[in-house]
Image (cartoon, rainbow, N blue to C red; front, top):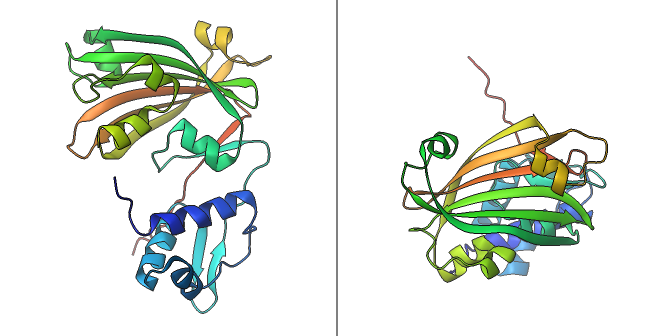
Length: 243
C-alpha cells in the first residue's frame, strides 16, 4: 500500500526527536532543507510538521522556525495516546529490545457479557489472542485482543506471534483509521500476577480500546495491561480560549 508523501519526513523528524538527534528546545532544519532532501514541496514538509505539532513533538514559532518541545523520559517506553501504533512499531521507535510470547490463540463467539465489555454484537465470531510483551527481557505488557473474523480472514498463530497490523495492512489491504481508548489504573488480576514482572506492585496501567477501519467497522477490541514505571503515555492538548 502506497504511503503518503509526508510520511518519510514525519518519521525521520519523529525518530530524530526521540533519539536525541534533535534535543529538547532546539530548532529543526528549515522547510527548504527538508524539501530539497526529500525532493518534495514545502507544503508536503508542512503537512509532516503539522502532524508532529498536533502530537506535541514540535511548536512552530513565527519568525524563528520549528522548536522541539518533547523531552523524552529515560528508561521508559513512550506510547502516543492519539496515534494508532502497533507494539512492534512502538518498540522500533523507542529503540528497545522486545520479544512477544503467544499464550492464547482461539476462536470464540461473543456472548452477552462480552458484548457489553467489547462493543461487539452478540453472536459475532472472533479471534481471541493473548500475548506477553517482553521489554529488555522483562515481562512488561499483557495484551488481550479480539479480532472480528469476517474482517480479518486468515489470521493465524504465526501471524499473531509477529505483527497482526502488518498482516492486515500489507496483506489484506485494510486501512486502520480510528481508535477510542480508555486508560485506567486497576488492581492486578491473577493473570497479571502470573505473567508480568510486577515485583512488589499489585496494580497495572490498563489501556482498552475499540479500533475501526476505513469502512467504519469496529474490527478489534484490545486491552493492554502495563507494568507501571516501564511506560508513559504522551498526548498534546491545545487550549481553546473561550470568548
